[in-house]
Image 1: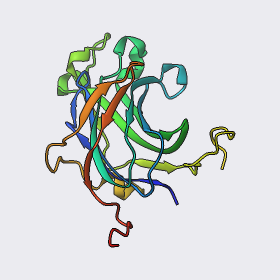
Image 2: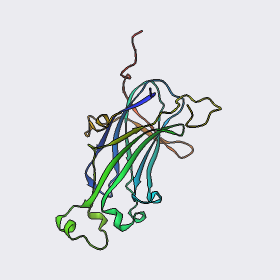
Image 3: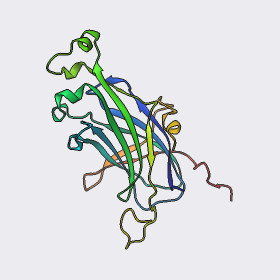
Image 4: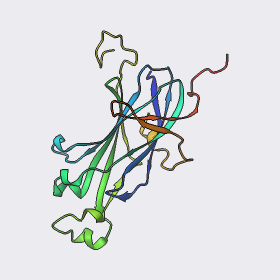
Length: 164
Length: 45
């Protein structure tokens, strides 16, 4: 059984403009006290074909981790559009929300994200160069893909990350 | 959690009371809002 269970993730301010910050309200419960903080990351997948276009939007430590239930809001800047290929900005991509403890990722939530113009005419006849100010981001919040990984929440000092 | 757990709420119930600061190493740290006991915690002596 995991020492930490994520009980709810609410996507806030969605849909919104592409350049607006991401906001997630995250609730979790901790069943045993932990020595170290949890690390939450938000990653924007800029290209389905090449992970070099992934952008880590935020990495934040959350703690102290004592027994109880907690919530917090994770806010992150939008991806840098100059680091995304023009042809990959409009369309469907993926956003990853991960949680790790002492370097061991134990939960990953994946969301599909649809980026499209806010105007029907622009959607039908998209300009050659992307008008980023007119792009709207829609996180498909009701279809998260949740993956959990077993980790050791109380590693011995001599054991490395990922060992049970 | 299941996907249902994660998606079940998409609205703020109330403003979250959390604190944020930068550690000396520059890392951002959030002290979350405590909202109660863990669901399976036996809190009765």
